Length: 279
Image 1 (cartoon, rainbow, N blue to C red):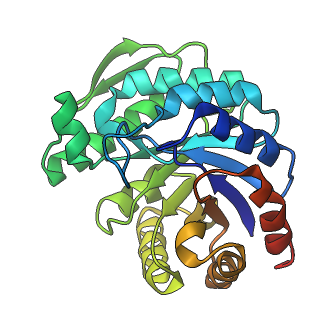
Image 2: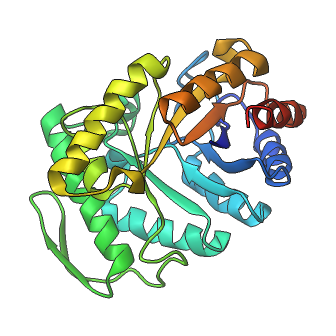
């Protein structure tokens, strides 16, 4: 079992997030650190502060040396796939090859309404997502990309310089939709993430992912399967470690701990000790 942390950048400051990530970077048990891709808070005062994820990620890449980093996950509706591919390549270079490229179809109606961003109906949204993921993979992997999709068209497109990680940074697809999200994950992802209450909800989704992999002849072991544990909701470090152990026994590869706010780096050492004791 591997472990990561997540600091949602709502109702916080840059300095608080920076300090947590710097401390986590010095604790080997934490493999990765994550933020999110939202422009408004999702809890509490929805008019409050929320730092932008990708700009923050580039700065955190420069401020750390070891820990892998990613946005969990980037809403495809917010940026053209070619723009996102160039952003990802640059952050991977800044980090020295530590980027995990998290993507999802997007869902937040409030943000879209506020900013005048179209939030298509579900079917179209996932059609756009499928095309977007493929376009990103091609741009990051190929010297020149021509892509004729319904929603994405590329003409002799380049994405230079290429990322450090080749053929591209790991694609992390987040979501639980059995027909579209998990099928796209089976085709393109090196890492699948989902947030569910517990292993009893996670196990059927993993079985669906395995089925999609088998249908296209892909080994499901090629895909890291991760889950999130929200420490503030489950009762703290002890219950969080116990839930992580249950996910381990169910077959998850990586547990990402959402840290409670206000962020305090002092929580990291006790958390590392608790999960290290799991073996």
